[in-house]
Length: 262
Image (tube, rainbow, N blue to C red):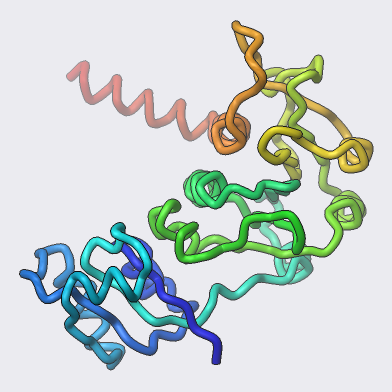
């Protein structure tokens, strides 16, 4: 079985909680064990995972980074999810699907940041391509603060064909384009949809743009090149989240005002 080394408190802890990976060994630096590690170690012991204590230098060598935070784990690789497994699963009539399609996002830090936000807003799946794409590596899990361990990442061969499939399933496809006339704050995101985010520098490829139903942009005061891919993704994801949860938000605000006016 292929293995990889997860590192950092949140990636290891979230992987333990998610239960998607097989844990072969858990590594702890020999220094004094921090209190937050106690719950993590308790879960590992309950699952009968072998725990080894290493010197910090040994852990650095094993993880190939200084960012291990005193913990690492030998685990099975991240398991991708099939697109049809998500698109075709039974849905409550009031629940609308949301997919994020990444076209040539090659920076692991961008992928990790995007995944972290995607999990927060309830994205059903993050779609990446087999070629010219950052992969869900331990580094990505670290950047995502362990969100990778819970999110559905779908790896496809051809993003154009994937868009066509999603459209056949009734989803509207929005493509992020800095030159688009329509902005994200004037769109109706209430239905099931997919949002295409372009890669660093070049944005969405022209062939992919042609398959999008609507191209949208994020308003900017200054005409700099564009927003970072992960920031642009966060803006549009939270606008979708805001629209879909407007009623809930009003209820929360009403309760807050009521409690503070007593």
